[in-house]
Image (cartoon, rainbow, N blue to C red; front, side, top):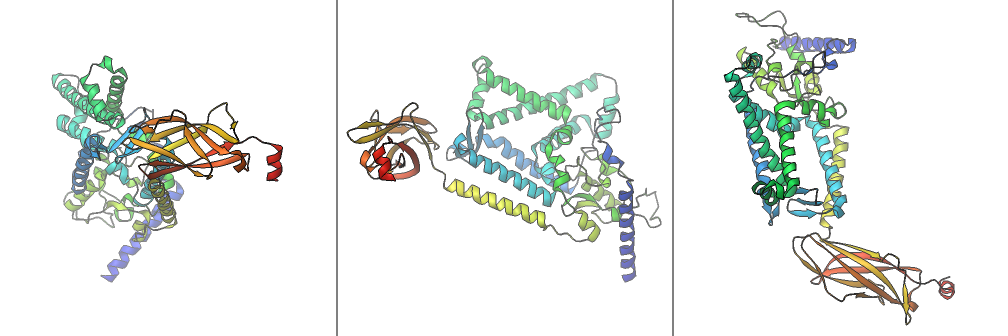
Length: 496
């Protein structure tokens, strides 16, 4: 047994040395010069992936059901009577987990986006492109919805190829018409869902039930979204991941030898060779029998045995296909599996490295900043500016400045506000119209105010006045205003 173990180790080292020699010599790397979906003339090659099955595929189905259920239910889910998620870019109003955000909260939104990208980067550095294969809406809809319908109507890959080569006849016309009609209906459903996330479920329902003439912008948006989704899932397909999505392009800088990806164990699999009937083994063979099922099931048309590639979305279809073959020929599963390059060469998996530590520190820092900003975030945003064209007024030994004050209510309830001068102690505040401040829910209110300070108490040409914004006795915010006084020789001499 010890001798067999030593032989296997020596064989693994020999295969590793050959692989490294091939890479250094530039052989076996021709696949990187082309894309599987484009021929030498630059013409699109249509992919007909074999219908996937297996343990991991069943898990993907379960994950897809959960995620798509949440996606379609999202516009109707409420937290405190408000949408779970609303991204109304037209009215510059955003609701995330029931909390309203406005353009004045740009810093919060910026930190949130940066933190999200940092998480994606960290996740990719450690676990590769699991997001693409298991969580990305593009992949979920394409592979788990539209292709499933295609398999149901046109059959598996071989049947689809035959149907594509056949001349047009009633059977072919019927299948194509039925398939694309269902594709269009699903695209309409997706478009309505996306629009509901943008303008809200109530307004989306109004667009559906009303005449297009009453809301032409909404109707055009609905038609545009439907056309885009139909084109992507019926025609563009995997090209969205290969040619458009920037995430795949980032693999070259994000993935390392420690990253866990869908990988082929070339040390165990090479040299590959066909296994003939009644043949038990060949001289010193690898476990790969070159059945090419891993290629046939790939939705982007690559050969995972060539190594990690930009087109790979980690959908794990090749893992299920290879495991099924290994079981049939009596070999251990896992020839293709989730693994890192280092774990294949050294048989040791270590995901902690300097890059992971660095990205983790960045993510923790960003999340701490975001948490602090959310905790200290005020329900009211107050902006106070001097009225344009005015400087100051002097009357009876009192200097006054005139200000425009704008209040933005970030809550879903109307607020009655009160402004109090906190410093300097002798300053006073007067509203020009004398009315109380009432700011509607998610609305805005404006007012014009005088700030007055006795001239004898002013020691600087520019004095900072601190104001407190209160509602029902609770302080919501502190703002500051610059107060201007006349410059006189006496005051300057006193100051000096």
